[in-house]
Structures are given as structure tokens and as C-alpha cells.
Length: 185
Image 1 (cartoon, rainbow, N blue to C red):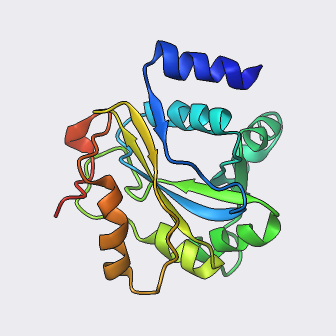
Image 2 (image 1 turned 60 degrees about the horizontal axis):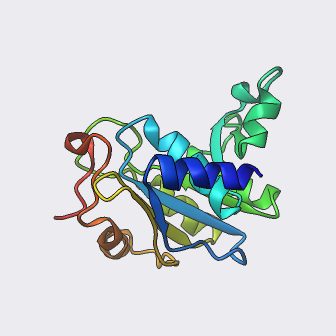
């Protein structure tokens, strides 16, 4: 019922489409989501998750997961990150993959909805450290399309791998194109 409702709103009313798919057999991965220029990206992700039926997750500081909102954030795919102790952010997030049977982390490498010239590399090093693949996911407002790319296993050569991953985002425009990271270099 919920999936049909999501499909009606997303496809019929909003006029969006989804290209590609996430293989349900891939239980753990990092979803590299670009561009991230607007709060609209959040509900597009929720619709995509609901329509595909594939669990997708996000992380947030552990304080958000306390009563009364903790249950809701977990239900929406959230996982709390605890940065206390000696772990850095990448190590803390990579460790979360060990705690779940299924965990597909959606992360925006821009790190903000403002204009950036360089991506934050954390998404890449999280995937490398957790030994999981990266799946590029484009939110293209120009074509009203969520485009799910092919599975990519990081090699440890960030610069070379980033060039390959960014090919998926060429010609893609965010809700606010002037704020989006340019994949064309």
C-alpha cells in the first residue's frame, strides 16, 4: 500500500523516474549521492527507498536517537554515530557496518548544500575501511531522474577512482544548479 502511494506521488504527481537499481544481494555499501543542493534531496531519497523497497541508511550524531525521536530516526534508516573514544569519524562510521547485517549508507560527499569545489573524501575512505562497494546515485533535477549507477569497489587510489565515479554525474543538475559540485573537470 505504502509503495503504491509513493509510486503515485513520485511518478505521477511529481513526474520523476528511477533509472538503474540496487542489487538486493548487496547488503552493505556506500551510496555516493550527488549533487546535494537542497533539502528536497531528503524526501527524494525517502521516496526512492520506499519505491525500490531496498533499505537505505544514514548516520547522525547519537544525541538525536534519544527519546522521544530515537525510534523515528531508526525507523527512517538512521544509525547513531558515537564519536567518543579514540576513533575518528571515518573509523567510527566504518565500524557501524560491523553492527548491522544490512547497511547501505547514503552520504553526500559535498558535505553541505552550499557550493564546494572539492568533495570530502570521507565517503571513499569509509567504503575502503569497511571493505564495501560504492554505488553512485545522481539526483538529477534537470531530467527529474534518480540515476543509480553500477557497483564500484575502491582500489585505494582515491584520485583515479574518483575520476571513474564522477563519470556517473556528468550532465547532472541539482535543485539549485549553481550550488552543485561540477563533475565535469
